[in-house]
Amino acid sequence: MIYSKGSIKNIADSVGIPKLKDGITTAMAQDVEYRLHEIISEATKFMKHSKRTKLTVSDINSALRVRNIEPIYGFETGRPVKFHKASTALEDIYYVEDEQIDLDALLEEPLPSVPLDVVYTAHWLAIEGVQPRIQQNPLPIDEEELVSKKPVKSQRQEGVETIPLVKHVLSRELQLYFECITESLQSPDPIVKSTALESISIDAGIHQLVTYFVQYIAVTVKNNLHSLEVLKTAMAVARAIRRNPNLFIEPYMHQLIPSLLTCLVSKRLCESPTEDHWSLRDGAAQQISEICQQFGQSYHTLQARIARTLLRAFLDPTKPLTTHYGAIVGLTKLGVSIIRVLVLPNTKAYMTLLDSEMEKDCEQLRDDARHCQNALLESLRALARDSSGLNPANLTSVEKSKLVEVVGESLANLVFKDKEGCEIVAAVLVVGRESRESRELKDGQRNSD
Image (cartoon, rainbow, N blue to C red; front, side, top):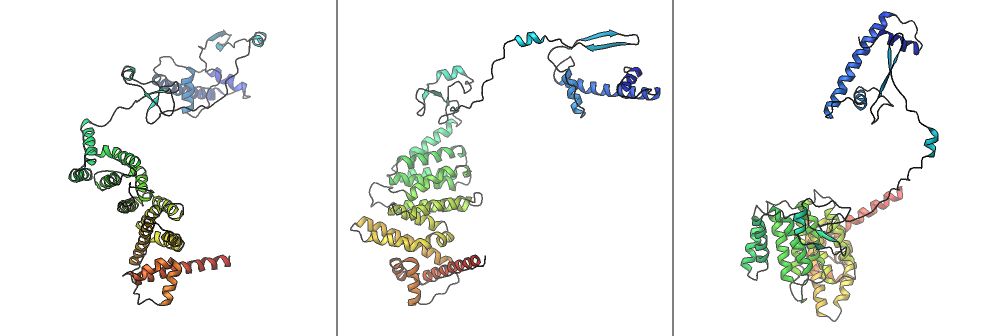
């Protein structure tokens, strides 16, 4: 027996249990021996997993924690534990000698240095995709390859050498394909250009090039803001990559939408104001509408954010009429609910601004104003087409006056001349009645509260 009965009796006497029976001490000694074997066996597992051949106090403490037993305190140290033997009349006792500390010598020792305060510093992990070679950043893995490369100076930090760490992931074939497509898109031959666009819209092996095409669209729109044909080509590329069923473009929508909005509400999109930039704005509005329909369920705030941006452009009197036109067309394409909530309530106030522009002695301003009038008229037509089930008869003077109150006199005159005028009036009056009833209901609830 490893653990003797005498040890059990000594421990019992120390805790105030004298004259313990022999049968009890024998049973307890056996149980203690079993527990010791169990703890040592568990500690040996920790020793073997640590790739060691010497059992340490930390292994015993780990085994005790596994058994939900409080670990041993005061023995876990980096120095080896030395046991000293003390012989008595009954048995030998082993103990660990406590280290004697000279307090005078301890007090005369110099104080340790004060630890540094915790501070935070900022540095560039990467600048435009390139990691600067500074002390805070890790060193490149392949030094010989990096030394052979030409250092690239950052535009944001003068004098800091940066070296690209990421190799080109595109295969040589995809690089040649992208170069060939971009050159074909700049070709004056419409057949070559249409062939390139068709390849983008149907090719199944160009998923890696999606981000490059999106970047190509953004750079093209930014650098050719007054070149109408180049902008039309960029919008055609956007339409082609969106309509390719083999491409997953959802992660790149946040990069594509700003380019579409630029082509929709930018002040100038061509060198001469007589060029047909209106069709470019119409096409951009249609693409934005399709994006909202396609990804609106995944991103619930997408349509609301775009509508808010277009509404600000629509209601800003400092913006040019070309921007107003793009905003009206964009809001119209977003759906009838947007027309009811955002366009129709602001139509009369906007027509006041438009009438003042029509009176100016400038043919270009009048032409832009007529386009804005037609855009508003088209939004009213969309509202009428959605209001199914209405069977308007001939317009009465009361209905005409109510329409003038909602959309203004000049736009009302255009509605009266339109072939869908009766339907438009009926739809506008229905929307006005619903809005009035809703306001009255809210006022009644507010008064009752």
